[in-house]
Length: 159
Image (cartoon, rainbow, N blue to C red):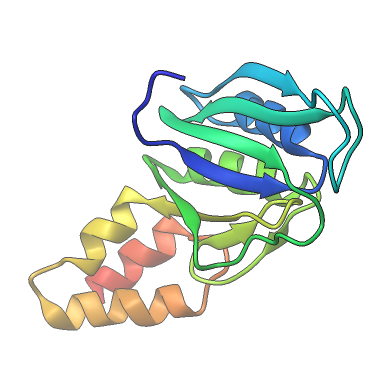
């Protein structure tokens, strides 16, 4: 790893599987070095995958198979800015249909419990509309959504 700052994510024996999914799903993502445990440890045996270096959309990450005691929470998420509905649908569906779950306002969780915000740029722009009434309509529309529907956001913005 060459990055000075790396996001460390804990998994229960599935760090390599997660890294491979992210590399397959997101652009500018890849799996790097995989390190195996040189000896037994509390949540694994010698030779098990201990850590995995990977990149998610250009962000350096380290997956650590730390065991079942460490869980992901919504306190950390990846926010992915999408350019259109097709990209929004593709990424959202990849996460949810691979054992993940829908949440609200563009949020979903992957099957490992990691949270993702699949956020169309159109939503971000509409929320920043200088017409505060338009921004409020957009906000209220978003609050009713799971996956963001850009056409509905644009309709709310227009009033």
